[in-house]
Length: 229
Image (cartoon, rainbow, N blue to C red; front, side, top):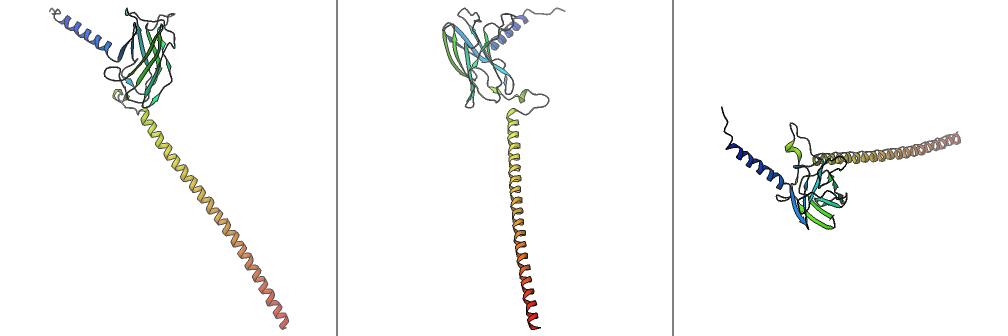
């Protein structure tokens, strides 16, 4: 039996090209800086909260050749979300000339995004004297937001960092409440002990006074009897 492949091959080719185009266009924003194109986005996508990732920058020249000779720190990125920002993170080349490992023109700044949401990258520095100052926020047209890892977990869904932090806060609150209660109980016990000590002291004084009064009364009675006799 002979397979008819002539009509099938163009379909496969079209699908492969469509997939390649989608893979190239998604997850990064490409901006022009003078003669250089700069692609900016997450290294790993989907980007999961609590998982190590990196800001990835790919630099090419006007001839679409990778620019692989930038030193560590020539480009830096500040990552921000939820009103908080990192310091300036150095984008280091991933290509190692000694081993030939890595990708030419690719630069990475490693970090672990810890909460889901939209993130903003502020890229600055220079490429062979060309100043770079670009800002981009995750969106449908730039790069992906950070998402919770629960949808990808199987078979057991693990608590997120936020869940663990919330639980830790609750435990801390309970411990603090218990400590406050223990302190109050200790304070009350000390107060009761002081009251008991004062009561014993007053009782001893009263008892002593009573004994003195009794002795004086006995002396008076004894003397009265002697005079009568």
